Length: 64
Image 1 (tube, rainbow, N blue to C red):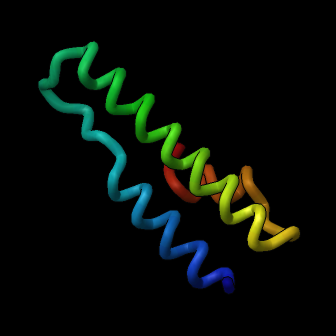
Image 2 (cartoon, rainbow, N blue to C red):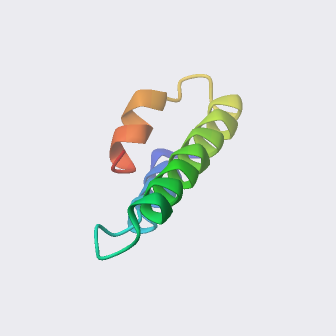
């Protein structure tokens, strides 16, 4: 995979970030927890595909 694909995946995950709106704080906390787990899981799989994958850079690009 190329950097272009990694960026597209990061953009999609950033777009999926839970909004800071009028939600129950517990629901919002759980939504952020699941979003962070998703980012971490995707990053782990991408790192397996490319040994030069920069995990921290990807996570930052996701908005986390």
